[in-house]
Amino acid sequence: MRSLLFRETQPVDSERRWVKQNRNALRVGLGPDVLAAKGTMTSYLGDVAFHHEKSGSMGKLAKKVVTGEDVSLMRVSGQGQVWFAQNAGYVFTIDLENEGISLNFRNLLAFDATLTWDINRIKGAGIMAGNGLFNTTVGGTGTVGINSIGRPVVLDCSKAPVSVDPHSAVAWSANLAPTVNNSMNMSSMLRGGSGEAIQYVFHGPGFVVIQAYEWTAVQQAENKGKGAISGAINLFT
Image (cartoon, rainbow, N blue to C red):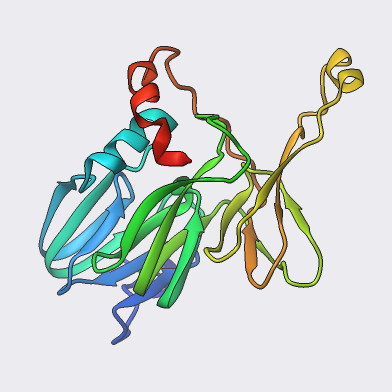
């Protein structure tokens, strides 16, 4: 049997631990453990195990309940190679050197288990669960694998303020502290709104990655987390 399928789709030959298989798939060599978003593993070779990764603290668990940020991770361990992908998105790796990146969890594929992570509220957003105003921050020294739906644009935020739709923001420098701009006014509300009422505004030394797609808001059950809000709200102040 002959086909270009067999010549152009073989596992990538590289000594690097983190490497792009192609524009839509990421291959990671195991040894050290990896934390990955659940549902992103597509295949693997070798002796590999997958286990649910606990939040690690009551604080993180409370934040997940209150914000609705679905940070569901699995620990990938063993010896072998694992391929990750999500929504046929474009795959990229970011090497952190004692620094951090803030990202939309739906754009996260995997990261070195030695890195730390947490859920953070965008300042000025208030408690707006399900509206994309909570992001996940990963920090330390190691590699993060992300994907972007469509080819992304990376903008420098140091020269002028950059406004971004929250559902299109993939990731940004963790040292940036975006504010939230609400452009909705009474006239616009009476006419049904523009659909672009809220934007993140970035300004400072750093970058923001924007995808050519807008995630739909995560729908949360009305009563989910209500009992935890009063006890956990101090986590975000």
